[in-house]
Each structure stands twice: as C-alpha cells, then as structure tokens.
Image (tube, rainbow, N blue to C red; front, side, top):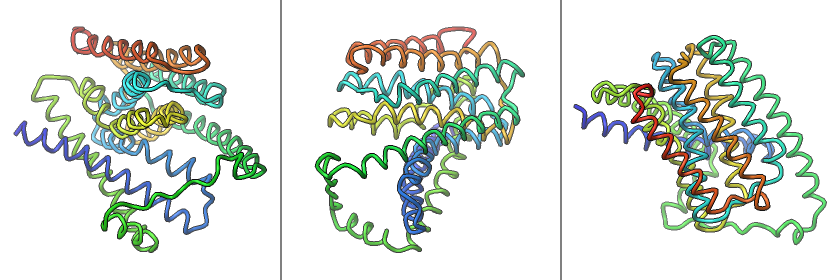
Length: 339
C-alpha cells in the first residue's frame, strides 16, 4: 500500500506540473483571443501559473484540514526557491539582480514574509481575515507592478527595433506533434479545452498529492508539517527548479531572480491568503514559527547578497545559500523539536 501511495504521489506531481503548463498556455491563448493586452496576461495569467501547483496543494490541504501541509508547502517552497534553486543556479552561472527587484520586489517579499510571521503569531493561526489582509496587500503590489510595466511599455515603444534588442525570432515547433499542437492552438475551442483540462489536472494532481502525502506521513511516523516542508514543497517547486537551472546553463539569467522572487510573493499573499479562506491555518510557535522565520531569513539573505558584487549572485553566494539549505534540512530531521 505504501508503494502505491508513493506512485500516486509521483503521478500527482506529474499532473500538477503538466496541468499548470497547459492551464497557463490555454489561459494565455484565450486571453489573446479576447483582446486582453499581453502586459496584463504576463502579470496575471503567467504569474498565477508558476504558483498553480502550490495553490492547488495548499487549498486542497486546507479543505481537508491538513493545515500543516498547507502552510508547510508555502514556507517550504519559498525556502526551496531561494536557498536551493537560486543556490544551484548561481553555482552554474552568475545571476544578475534587476534594479526593479531591489527597489520593489525584494522589499515586498520581506514585507510578505514578516506579515506571515506576525499574523501567525498574533492569533496562533492565519485566519480568514488575515487572508483578506494578505490579499489586500497583494492587490496594492499588483497595482504598483501594472504602473511600472505600463511606463516600461511606453518607454520601449519610443525605441527603435535595434535599441529594443530587435524582433524576437519565433522558433518553429519540432516534430509533427509539435506542429499539430501549434495549429490547433489557433482554434478557440481547443484553447478552452486545453485550459479546462489543465485546470482539472492541477486540481486532481493536488488532491492525489495531498492524500498520498498524508498517508506516507502516517505510515512513516513523520509529521505532516515535515512532509509539507520537504517532499511537497520541493515537488511543487520542480517547475521553477528545472526552468532556472536550464536557464542558468544557457546563460539566460536576466529574469531568473525576479521570477523566483515573484513566485515567493505570490505564494505568501495568494496561496496562503486564499487557503486561509477555506480553513484557518494553525500556526504553532514550536514548529511553524521556526519555518516562517527561516523563510524570512532566506529572503533577507537574498536581499543582502544582492547588494554586493554589482548586484550579482556568484558562486560564493550560491554556495552560502546551499549551505543554509542543508543546515535547515539537518535541523528538520535531527532536531527533536522539529520532528
């Protein structure tokens, strides 16, 4: 039975990752057909898609009252995104931190991390009204993002194609299946179907993953909190891990750090915020507080490291982040309090 649950856990991960991919692709195509500006698509649909696995898992966990998995998934994914994913990526290739991330995104991430700690400690749980606070702050952040993106869009329109980097070359799909898929994406009914199938895969994958994770935790005598912080958190961060490391190998690092920061902001404000509307997320001072503080410390470390070496994360920064990640995991599995 345990082997079956491990298999279902893997199937759940696969459904989450591929379902999120199809959901984003279908949503973007539908939005284009509805004449929604590409700027809006990029700041909403694509941003939502990168955290769709975390959102599906945390909401499913909240509905099933497995709140340790829900909150562990949020803070665990944030810790993994910074310390593990950026750590590995920085070892592969130097990562520049964009000026916009230093001025807005990183301070907002620190605010979000501090809010999660504060709201959790205040009532020993993230209640529905706390969720509304998180969502309200997120709305303000999105307004600032839209304003900044509109200014940048206007600036780019004033540049010549050469100054703007030239027109991007469209890479034709490989193989007959890829060509067929591209031709089908031009049909409205297919893009709507893609969106719905992707959404169904995300929801179904999230349900499978949570149920399997709960069974494995019980069978192995491990707390749901540890499962949420490790297996579930790393699993839902797999898309970011694969994308960032491959981008680092190719030297395409311009937005790598910004994407991770944006995903972490979304995790706290949207994933934790929406999940708390379904069920209060219990916040223990002996466990969840340490995890949330670790997520805050990871964000603070990223901010400090970004201030040096011309706002670039090099091999030393990557090694330091990976060392912190290993140290945190040693604490999780060796500390009697953590277990």
